[in-house]
Length: 338
Image (cartoon, rainbow, N blue to C red; front, side):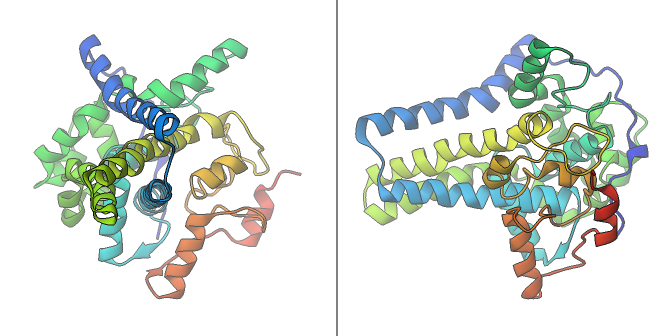
């Protein structure tokens, strides 16, 4: 299968109408404020009452499930189509990724394909290094890529309505004459827009986010037979998990374009970072990924831990994944820095 991302599909974006002050404030509160409040409450609860084994289990379990949805589902399957799998697994990965609350599968994939078309050059939506020189400017770029970049991307709040308008006629979205961010994102993913089943699941994004909060509360309540257990499940498996997964994923924008090693030759500032690789189930081998974005695996050395790649290998062994893409040894050798 050919890599769906074509750099010719995107030229550097023209100036998009900025979100108004109140809308920017509301978006910032929804994306960063609420999750950080939830994390803060979890810290307060930990100091006051400690943490229980069930709390840890729900936190870790929900973190792994939703991070799998982001890295294995949104990233390696939907954004890059590095392998094929069954319809049931595709749906499960979409739901798990949506439960992370980072935007719908199509919005996430469109932004990511856009990023690969313009990595660290004009047009990149969240580069921490583009046009920034000196220590203070680099610090500002890091914080912007981690916490604020979406405030300058109106499509983030408009894309769901755009898809709804064109859901019955995706070709109209792909051929629309407008030159706004929504249309540009749509043009990066004709393969996804033409999948009606995917569109139906994608447009239920709010339901899947809610499921990511309700599920640990239900498990906590049933496991303890109490409302307190349900509340603690919501706090640890819902609120705290939500914030931690969000910040770990956003750190791919900031940390892995500023801190780490560059063993593979690329035209951007992508870097490998072992800590981020563990936290994101393999995405932290970011220099590897940018060198070969169509690869289902990011572990190019025996010691590089790529949990998502391991899951793909298991699925392939079970006959549940096929057309798994990876670079040849010759291609790896040609791109290695000497």
